[in-house]
Image (cartoon, rainbow, N blue to C red; front, side):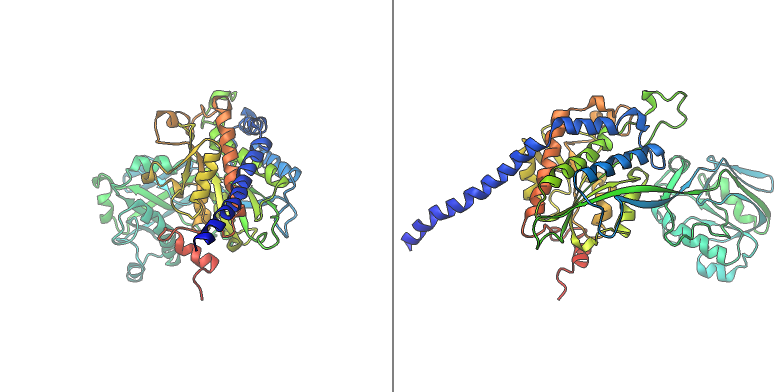
Length: 506
Ligand SMILES: [Zn+2]
């Protein structure tokens, strides 16, 4: 026995050395191949003033998409199987805020923003008597004749308290009252959770949303749907006594329109015939928030949100990964994804998750880059460290470039669910976001986050080069493991993952 162990020891040593050596060799190769000049060039180009902040729906963003697609092709990536281009069209519905909103009954007139916000895209006017209900539930609508009337009710459904619930219930309620023949719906809003003024600021900008997949956006019988400020209650309490009184609603402004924006998706085939049908997705959004609203002319640099950290850095990271893996593919295939409309509510990635170009159950991992910025150049902040089986690889990848991987420092901010990784995670794909070193939302972060100061001149390119190299090395390691990393037990998305990959299904 003793001699057996003695014989085995040098053997184990020999076995373990080449694999360690091989790992550091690939890190060294990444260090040689992934250059600061390449990364700096792409960040400076994509965050240049001429892109006017890469707002969704602009020609400047389309030019950025063309730039990304062209490089993907140059680096040897291919469109997804069955697709002729690197573009995935994302149909979006764009609506501007109404120019004016008015609701009047008897001698009282309610005004836009002070009292009223529009919940849907109705434009036009309606004159009809009021029908006062409590919540406009299905039962109430059976008991009351609302045909040809404007329904007034509280927001949401019985027992609901939060604005999220109110929003969630809004469309179904509108459909219900329309079905019952009503000509309008006004809900009285009174939630202490979200003050009226915050709601107004949130809802009065221009809006972008995914177009209805069924193409049913142009409801022919769209009726006006408003919320009215029910605080203090005295403002609106008297309405409950005005059943059958004649009222007038008008909403003016341009109607909504459909626009097409683009995700850019490329694929690099893996080197292992057995594993190449599995895909590691490397992603980043390439849009940003445009220019300051109501900026004076001409547009000068101080009115442009360049979005260097957010997210020219991530886009440059995906391009650098494409360049590297185009030459040195890992065993698994790689999907390179640049998302549009992240800043409008993760719209590009959400659309992809519903309409994937490569089956999601073959997409075994998603490493996303996004972030508010950095305040510690010794770190990488992995939003999702401690949630998947890739922790060791992620930490080793950061370590190989002199960085320390740390988990989400502000879990209460729910960052995990606030970027594009969440679109994939909800479907079950293990999907952390590999962010620049963030230790807290401090003054330094807030100075740049969604500010015109997030400019390419303000970046530490030596740090960003190491950071992007470590991202590529993390992807390399995940792309080469025998077993793709899954969610850790008990994770919020573990069940979605089991369903997606059929884990545990006998
Ligand atoms: Zn971002």
